[in-house]
Image (cartoon, rainbow, N blue to C red; front, side, top):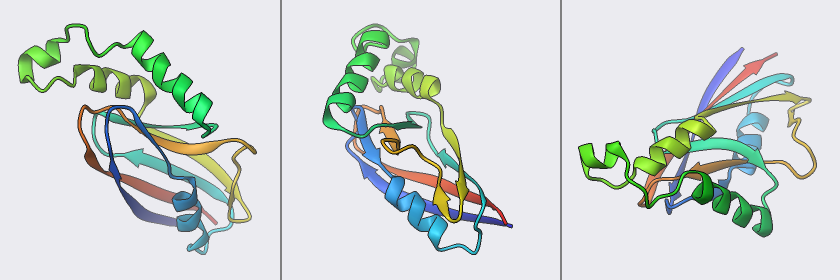
Length: 138
């Protein structure tokens, strides 16, 4: 069986990190599927999905890592072409990735104790985001 749902959210952009674990678990709980996988996909080319320990120190470290590795204030060809100043957002999002697969058992995501599912919005402005949640199993 396959069930497809969506999660909508509002982001502040600029590296905003949003914990969506409760929403994903809720969508799973509402299905008749006990065991399988949840595939998450974020629409858009300036945001990504990952898992992380969602605590202030690590969130700060994670944001600083992006700035060290893919700085905002260097020239990007994308910015020259489009003038929107978010070339760094596209590069960061492509490196992080737009999808994530998580197994579940007995209607519970098999995340680690300190592991949460997060959306990272790298764009240089606030955005409305949508995550496709596809639940597959039996």
